[in-house]
Image 1 (cartoon, rainbow, N blue to C red):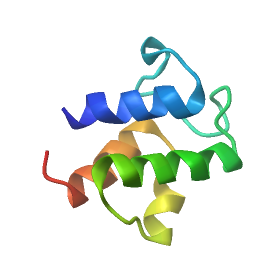
Image 2 (image 1 turned 180 degrees about the vertical axis):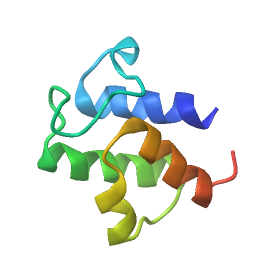
Image 3 (image 1 turned 90 degrees about the vertical axis):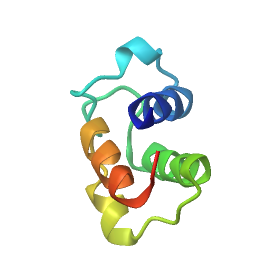
Image 4 (image 1 turned 60 degrees about the horizontal axis):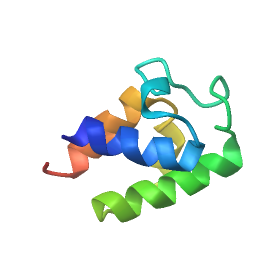
Length: 77
């Protein structure tokens, strides 16, 4: 469930099809995912999961798997 919600948010923010988002989706190597879009993604994830992410967490959320891992530690599905 968490994975699907993260993919949905990433799809909307990055303007990508859900099928384009995978374990290999990484900032700087994915179309439309730059530092500005990263902040928009963080805001959207905070809203979707009703959390406030720390600066340390934000810095480490550089791939789809890491985003899921960090959110999993903060959110019960």
